[in-house]
Structures are given as C-alpha cells and as structure tokens.
Amino acid sequence: MLNIVIFGAPGSGKGTQSKLIAEKYKLVHLSTGDMLRQEIAQGTEIGTIADALISKGNLAPDDLIIKMIGLKIDAHKKNCNGFIFDGFPRTVAQAKALDELLAKHGKKLTLMIDLHVEERLLIDRLLKRGLTSGRADDNLDVIKKRLEVYHKVTVPVLDFYKQSGRYVAVENCTTIDQYFERIIHLIEFSICGF
Ligand code: ADP
Image (tube, rainbow, N blue to C red; front, side, top):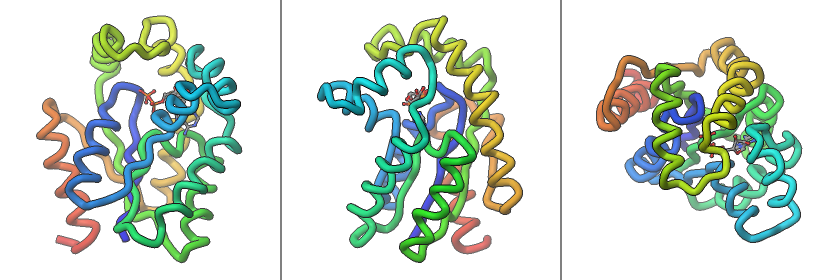
C-alpha cells in the first residue's frame, strides 16, 4: 500500500499533482478542501461551520477533519492500493491522528512530499484562479490570511515528518510536468530504493 501526503502552501499545486499521482498509482485521492466544499454546497451542518471559517481563511476544527478522513479511510481501505492525502494534515494534531488512523489498519504513511513554490507566485496563481474558481477564499485579503495560517500552524507539520524520516521536498520546478516527474522519481525511490 502506498500512502502519500502531498503538502504545500495554498496555491502550490497540491490538487493538480494529487490527481496525477492518484491516476498513475491507482490511489484514492482524499482532499479535505474538496470534502468541505462539498458539505458547503450541500448545505449540511458541517458545511455551515466550514463556510464561516474557510471564507475568512481560517482552518476547520481538527476533530471534524480527523473524523471526516477516518470515515473515508474506513470506507476505502479494503479495496484500494493506498491513499493520497491532499490538504491534510494541516496541523501537528492532524498529522499524529493520521498515523494513528493508518496504524489502526496496520498501515503506515510512505512519504510526505512538500511542494515548494515562491510566495510571490502563490499569490499570483491564487488571484488568477479566483477569476474562475468561484471560491470565496480566492481573493487577496483571504489569500494573505491563508498564507499567514499556513506559516503559523501548518509549517510545523514539516518538522513532524522530518523527525520521522518521511519528508521529501520538490523545489525549483516550473511546469506541472516537471513537478510530476520529480514526484514520480521520489515515489519510485521510496518504493524500490533506486
Ligand atoms: P488551499 O490549499 O488552496 O488553501 P484547500 O482546498 O486545501 O485549498 O483548502 C481550502 C480551505 O479548506 C482551507 O483554507 C481551510 O479553511 C479548509 N481546510 C482544508 N483542509 C483542511 C484541514 N486539513 N484542516 C483544517 N481546515 C482545512
């Protein structure tokens, strides 16, 4: 089983790369952002809570996110090659919970892949995406807040994975294909050690 966390700032291309990885390795793609947006679109109770937080650039509560991911792992674990976690974990508490959720099924996280993108590019990309995404959080004020939350609350997650030897980074790439090629190389290396 291949279980991968794709990590990075808002706008770093986590979603794009996750889709490509999921397709190549036949993994289940779990995006907590997509799950929350679905709850919002369906007008559920979780959606109402999430909407108020997301539209201001704040994170959803850990317990809610951990429960959501736990249910998805339970639902798919029997017949899948593994998972790609996109936008999760975003806090150290979530990272610890993910290890526990996988351990419950005798599984481990294979790799955490950190996508490095210059901050200037992130803001440009998110503003551009905002023109067509219809997302309430793709505007300058909320983008700044999301980046602030990322640095304060999410970046410490990197240390958690560095300490346990599961951290790899992809940097100095320009195109989607270039990022993907490097990611494949890192995944193959972690599987086969070459
Ligand atoms: P991006 O990485 O571009 O911010 P996402 O779709 O991953 O996009 O997340 C959008 C928003 O959803 C986040 O800003 C946050 O409010 C909420 N969210 C997504 N994943 C999590 C998570 N793991 N924990 C808490 N909040 C989350």
